[in-house]
Length: 244
Ligand SMILES: CC(C)(COP(=O)(O)OP(=O)(O)OC[C@H]1O[C@@H](n2cnc3c(N)ncnc32)[C@H](O)[C@@H]1OP(=O)(O)O)[C@@H](O)C(=O)NCCC(=O)NCCS
Image 1 (cartoon, protein in one colour):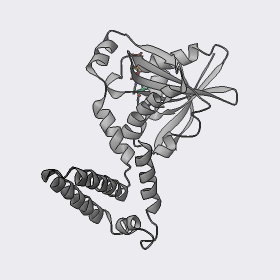
Image 2: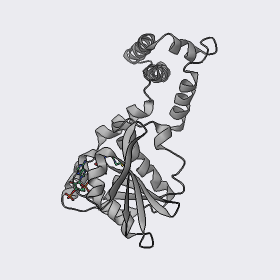
Image 3: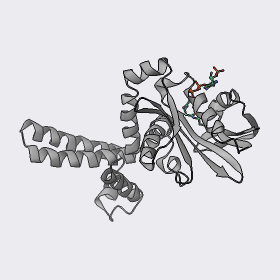
Image 4: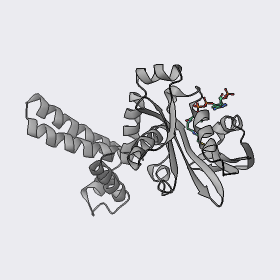
């Protein structure tokens, strides 16, 4: 999300539950979700009127109001603007060219070339974990990215899958394994995890906190499950490991 939208959203979230007399946003949120939705509707109509009248400056200003009220309407329903952005990205999905190339197996898997490429990993993680699975931004974008080695699967210039790996107590933890929905079931997830294992011949133990749904996927890669099921980010998980 652009910095300004991210900032606006964090201000709105901070006002949630605050004393209604402390700010306009807190007052609106205290009136409930129906009122917030109604207010968004009013702002949207004002934008329509400005557009219909050819009032270009007015339209910019009304759109800013509508956007702000859209975020309040979302916050009133415990939804974040990031989820809307993730849905837009999901709809953009994967281009037809990438789909075709994936079918012919033209996939490159590699660690990031530079830090700038991390935005591509984040894009995929936003779509898959935040958009599809509803994981909160604060949980998804944890503080471990800088200490991790990130991998991308690319079709041409298009990033379609990601994963990260980091050392914790002598064990390499593989995390955030995500393949864009349109390209699942084609061996990309397998190739990504295998590449991480291959790239680290000095490591004799790899660990994964696997979503229960993905346990068969990691099992097919030689990982064994142990211990009980537990919840992480509201999703059932099991610990799995691969030793060699
Ligand atoms: C889990 C995920 C990464 C798998 O990626 P993928 O590219 O679809 O998997 P692959 O095509 O490489 O599958 C590899 C093997 O696992 C199997 N497999 C994959 N997903 C499976 C599932 N949900 N259940 C059972 N088997 C599965 C495949 O059949 C394949 O087996 P095979 O080689 O014997 O045919 C992908 O589904 C995904 O991104 N899911 C959403 C994010 C997520 O939950 N990540 C895991 C977090 S722990």
